[in-house]
View 1 (spheres, rainbow, N blue to C red):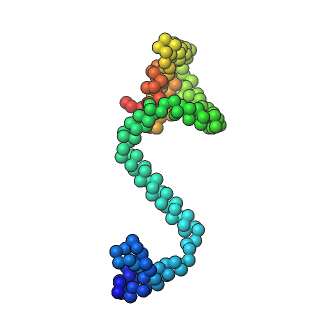
View 2 (cartoon, rainbow, N blue to C red; view 1 turned 90 degrees about the vertical axis):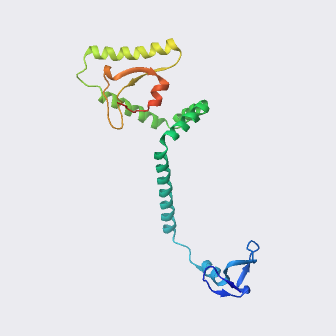
View 3 (cartoon, rainbow, N blue to C red; view 1 turned 135 degrees about the horizontal axis):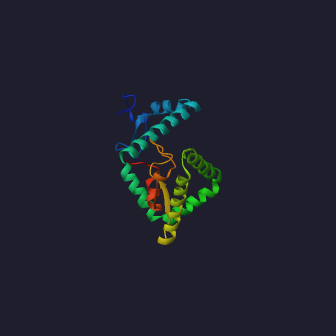
Length: 188
């Protein structure tokens, strides 16, 4: 005699299927319980899709919370991975840019429009000359030092919390590696 773990009734051994994995050599569920679960009609496709979507959302939320709790660790891992695979990453980015020319152009034009909107009309000729000089300084430093220098906006034009202006006193010339690691962030 054996107790079915599903219906909790005690039945003779011949009511159970064989299973070598269990100690007693029989399945945990009796044959009528197994047959009952097999006879259930399949769930409608909408229900299955909805459950999958809910599970995806839960998984994404867990990932987001983990990322928020481990931001510094994630950033360090990303930087380390980039340094280890610099050439591969650059090739991947170049390939992505070739395949997504429209997106690249849209982003460039968006930034250009932001820059135009961030350039105030009250700038004088001297201010425009100073802006040109800053860009010329970046070009000269790149030529002199042998690595690329960028003109950076101290307060980003497209910042998350604050947006700066395209004016001479908001510009600085810094190495490209420093500018790229800054990523549109403003730290007061």
